[in-house]
Image: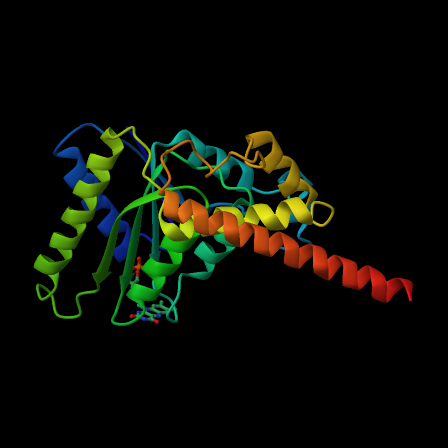
Length: 266
Ligand SMILES: Cc1cc2nc3c(=O)[nH]c(=O)nc-3n(C[C@H](O)[C@H](O)[C@H](O)COP(=O)(O)O)c2cc1C
């Protein structure tokens, strides 16, 4: 099994050591092909805000740096650990740049079948915010988030060790077990709502979002009988609510378009 760690800390400190502990625990069970991406070592530029990646396609991004290699490495891994210390109650700037540069994947998800573990370290506050944020982002990218570990720095040596180690062990074991599983998870209610909500927008507003419209079309997600991004059983009640919501949203968008045209023409 191949694990990639995306390291959002600018040093080999607490977060790196926590990731190493996860590696040790996983290797008690099986050989793991383990790789780090230290974001600090990459040529990773800030997003320039043109939105070309979202509107036209990621190949139109004007920045030529190490991002595309990074995306490929996530595709090549079976599981990815997204690791960040808490900086000012959120992920580090490095991690945020990495996420922003992949913003188009929120519109065009692609990592289905891949597992993710979220790792955050902090002095005292902000762990839950960072775990929640990273979970939301990579889940929308298509990853199945199977483990989360929030670790506190030890200001007095020995005081947090047992608790931290327990959290790392639980997350590492869940992650390891998930990497043996092949069957994709069943989507939750919000997954279905997001699927139908995005479909209404990208289909009705295909001129505004041509890359999204084309990608969803290629994937077969625009087909009437498509119920989710992947072919898995969908709770019929969730599906019914999603279909209704999509109808309502399509009608609303068409109404807005008619009214705007009317205003422009008078
Ligand atoms: C610039 C900066 C901002 C930080 N902000 C917070 C914070 O908001 N909340 C917190 O609990 N810890 C905060 N910390 C502490 C780090 O999250 C903590 O020491 C973390 O384990 C560092 O990880 P690292 O050793 O992998 O770099 C901050 C540290 C730095 C350097």
